[in-house]
Length: 130
Image (cartoon, rainbow, N blue to C red):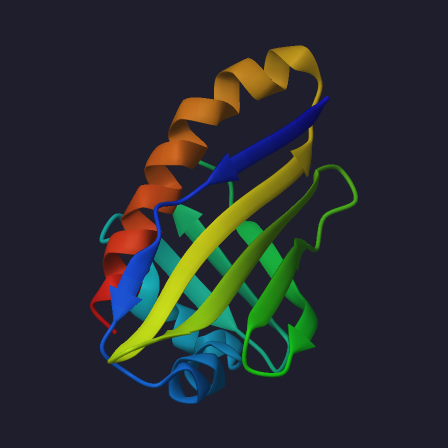
């Protein structure tokens, strides 16, 4: 079952190219992780994070579209999902929005929709503070 969750659009007081450059480096995702992240590790094209009470999630950079889109995919074969960040120019900075796309069965979709929506909200709050 296809699952799509959109984070709210946020404004960042930096040029789009600067935001894109920052988020193109997996290690920099630690800057937007929620405060309840207990573990964060990164490599050249991946990062791993763990929230309290949940298993660790490893994400790999799947696509970098010059200055306007970053696509991260799950590194696990068990769960198929991606996190897409889109960036657009605004008068005095950048508009950014996060989108979650996943393929889950109906039961899993019911279980993960609310926590994922909350997680995207926390990521969006931190993204706005970059």
